[in-house]
Length: 219
Image 1 (cartoon, rainbow, N blue to C red):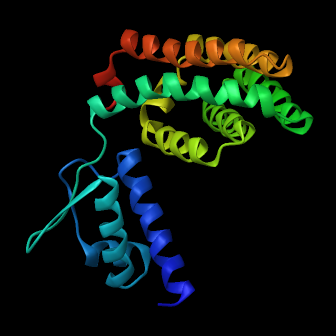
Image 2 (image 1 turned 30 degrees about the vertical axis):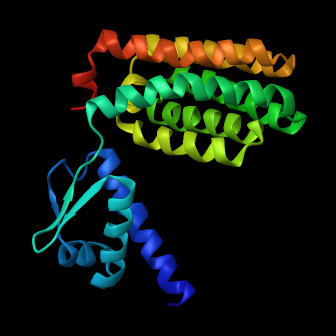
């Protein structure tokens, strides 16, 4: 098959995956090849391939002679991911403290500056994007392709609850200060401190979810 074909299949995969993780496609909803093909303006073949890939990822179940159905991400999945992120984000920050460059620190400083600006303006959508970017910069600074890949996936899996959580001004302020502390530990080249702060950052997020109610975050 041509490179263009694989690229098209990958694009369809990404769009369906995003739809599942954002809640556009609900759990147990049937994903019809014809309907999705019309929605994305493609033939059924790249849709079929994308659904098979999503089945391998555990987001879709394909039942022979019936169709493809959304499995999605359950509440327990979300809780499990946050517990795993506590460990892995800490490890990531520890490695980043040893490997981070001055250019990467400058990008993190800019991220903090923009976060403070948009927090004052209550631009919550921008806050979510800046939070995404902060963690992406941290993943890059770790120097580990494998760890970055896992954490990016986890970050996408919990995007629905993150958007809700970052809509609360108190948590936004707390998160901003936690990010600043992590950056200072990175600047000081202190792996142990960076790991402790990054772990605490995710643990505080879990505590915030507990206060708000996990079920409410999934609606």
